[in-house]
Figure 1 (tube, rainbow, N blue to C red):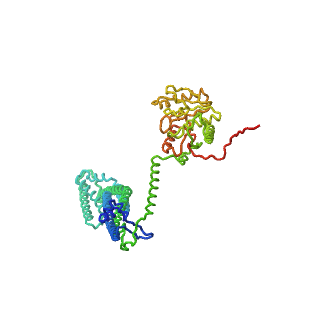
Figure 2: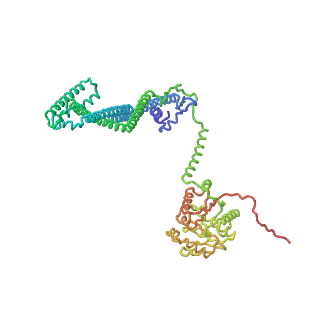
Figure 3: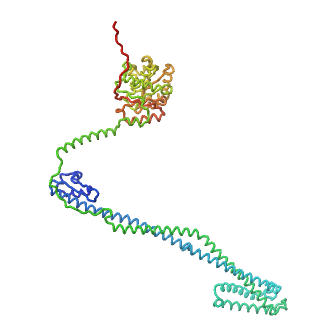
Amino acid sequence: MTSNDTISQVWEFDPEKSLYPRLSEYKSLFDVSPEGESTIISLSAEGSTPELARQRTAALIGAFQQRLNELRLDDAVQRSQFMRKELEQAAENLRQAQAALAAFKASSNLVSAEDQTREMVTAINTLTTEQAQVLAQAQASKAQVETLSARLELNPEQAIRSLSLGENQDYQFFRQELSEVEALLTETQAKFTDGHPQVQALLEQRQDLQDQIERYIFQARAAQSGVNATIGQESAALIRQLILAESQTQAYYSQGKQIQTQIDQLGSTLKTLPAAQARLVQLQQQYDIAEGVYNGLVAQVQQSKLNAFSSYPSVQVFEKPRADSKPSGPGRRPIALGTILASMFGSAAIVLFLESRNPLLSLQDLQATNLPILRSIPYFKHLVVNIAPRVETEIEFQRLASAVSMKPLKNRRLMIASATSGEGKTTVTLGLASALITLGFRVLVVDGDFRKAELSQRLGCDRFAMSEVPSAPVQIRSGLDLLSLRPDEDKIAEFVARGSFEECLNSAQATGHYDYILIDSAPVSLTSEAALMATVVPNVLLVVWLGKSNRNPFRDTLEQLMRHKAQILGLVVNGVDTQPEGYFYECKKAPISS
């Protein structure tokens, strides 16, 4: 209701539009609040006059209803377009599935796999039975040929020669015709009854051929020399039966071969049915799915036409707009309170903005590193060798020295480092060295900040020129020596990386017999040589200052030291406000009067 599109329609025709140049200012005149646990929405509008307030309320209601109608129409159009594309795609998928199914049925001649398989098996069984019958008839005809040959003591060929028919071409022609007619008659009798015209015609043709053969037999017996004269009419009939039986035998065997060919073809087709049936089932399933999707989309299209108010319900006005008798507006006290709150929130926002740009290190950040906090040093001014720190500060340094003395340090070397400058790294180095001397150790401090040399300045060695800086340790006081190294500024990284720095440490340690060597390094996040020193002095004591150190450089320092395989012994938190408790245990002397 309070969208920019709806409010802008009211704003365009408002008589006081010039008083509200921005739409956001004009929108603040309206208040829309839904009633709890109901579908009722309360609408209120402000105006310079009651009539103007009523006009604005009525105009907003009308614009809202008009906007709802536009949204309903747009929703219907989008649904229709979306459904149309989906419906066209579903129809195309259905057509493709139907075409693929029909093409496969046409190419494979497979419509119903189960019915066709059943019919094919029945046909094979029928042909097998028919083949068995034909072979049985062939065997019977063959037996008849053998019987007649035994009675005549002639095989069919000898009987024909005896009748002088072996060289007679006409006789051979009629005999061949008789054999073909017998085969055709046998095949026709398998299909039709004996009274069928084709069967009768073949019987008559066979009879004619038999009569012709019989006439040739009689002619051969009378005219051909070497013919057995004892053969009479009965022998001729037997010879005719022998020839007929032989023709029938050949016809039966030929018919059996044809039946076997049909059986083999049906068997081959039957073997291909499982794969074809699987493909047919797959295509049928694809067609069923496409048909279901298409029918579902058609139903959705019809349903969307009926649900015009499904997304945007109907809106009714329960009460006409009316003006309140008491004018509304802020008083002086809310205005003053709002000004104060705005100032407070603005200050907080500025603090948060500065914190987000350069976040300060907090105690939670230190706890997240899982590194032990060896000591917390109270705030005091710079420590110099001739000025003793406060008693509580000296105690903290002695506790730090005690903790360091309990650590197994490689080569008795310890690098004191910090992320950035100004975190008290040099002060901690001097305080720790002084505390170790108090414990009876001989200490060498090394100025590893080759650019600023703050440690050397603190100990009064800044008066030497760069060329006059001694390469050997210089005694500062009893038990404390200083090694100040000042390589060329453009070769500092090379000085550390090539091993020159390590050679200086080894030389000083070999001649001085020091118990501890403390290296005051440069800030890790500001220089490159500090991280390289970690390869020479892997034991690192990291100094931080809560409320002064920044979070991002601190994290970057940890990553660089770990990347160079440094062993961080712990953290020293500098600048901590502490309140001394109890009393100081000390010896008091009083003069004794005599």
